[in-house]
Length: 448
Image (cartoon, rainbow, N blue to C red; front, side, top):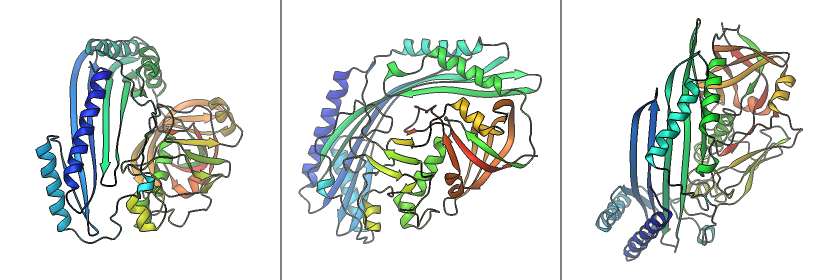
């Protein structure tokens, strides 16, 4: 399908295109920043053992930012021909002329830019043919459908494969690139008994196909998950401790990342606005951002502005050490650029407390709720107020008793963060946020 030689040749050609357009733009007394993203791959979906989708995709984007007298113009095109790229540049120039002056519109300092990008082993080329992909998803779904008589239907098994080539350059001499791959296998299944139907799913994501969980693991797990949700019960409105399972615990830290992003800080639209160098998590908890994990889902040798990425503590022993900044937000806040244009990289949630297995976490909680799915998005980042629908299981004496649905968990994120008591060792590897299950002290549960 996609051979390594072909991918590397394509990267080289795109890099030459970028070099050529930068040479063209250098004739103007302007500051230029530009990138090319070229992505290609395919998607296969099977439902009830029938092929529903075989989809090939190939997308390209050329984006250019022009800075002129503290004015900025941006333009983009999906046409990577030299003529189109020149016209895109001219459009950006015209936009810049008619834009307002903003003294924070600048390129990153040259000393921050990447020079020799590290090889982070983000590209793993496996020539998985369409027929192989079809067999993979058919087998995954078949294992689920045959798992138990309670399994009655399927939401589909899906295999996704993509390659991305990223080129970046600017008028300060930057011209760098890297390639990455992404594979995923997922399966959604439906179970039924006399009380009704329930659905659940399982999935695996990796940059290396050989490290994906296989059909047997994903098929059985999705079926098992769907069956265990049958015959859910309602509970009374109350306050209870909860455990957020490792497949959803990352969501809390994504809310944290959003609340400390530069744009929300300089717009004064975050409940953590005055929290820099203050305690926001328990003192046994740290967050290390490591963009250089080999093969990591959040690994990058440079950010979206070409700034070299580096390891740093976001939170150290509970203390917030930095905002998440790109060049513009760092200028607005008069702080150092943190190399986070485009968002966060790999976050490792470090537990300096005693380590516990997931089973031990249930025992420690004793009585409460295990939350396995969150619904809706009732988060107000300005106040920190948090309210989301939830699905899970009632736990008593450290043992799961019965499934629960129709509940809402609510509170304030600032309090929720500080009320994290323990993190288990069952780390979810399907995300750039590496976190186990979280035990959170009593939280409001809205039931019946």
